[in-house]
Image (cartoon, rainbow, N blue to C red; front, side, top):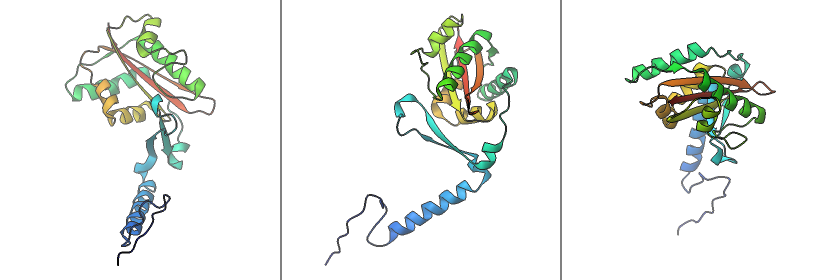
Length: 197
């Protein structure tokens, strides 16, 4: 006679032979080990309630959360971007004040709304913000990030994300602008705009 068992939706790993409980425990142990290491300084998952906005939720360790935010040094940020690009055979970019103004528009708008995405509160796109700042783009790309304590941390996240990495390595861009703003609670909003006229 075959035993039948109904699986409670709250226990998706429940199985007849006890493997589900072992799997559940193994996952819990792995998560706890991950969270107890310095490598768990930041853990990102997509937003579940607003998945169309391009946002992500960031969970950080208490140690990382206690670190102070490093002020943005645009020239140092550009040097980091260029080091990444040249490592993969791409030409270096120049810092463009107009693209930095466009990036600042987006960072400030995101900080004001405590929201992350590529559309401005007025519905503007990265290309439209670049044009408003006096840049005449043939091509534009934008990377945004939130919650990181430094530009280096934001860049590291972009390097590990396929879409953001593609933007960083676009062969036809020649200039970049970068900005950071903080909301009332101190959360950071980073924007990197890339373009070519």
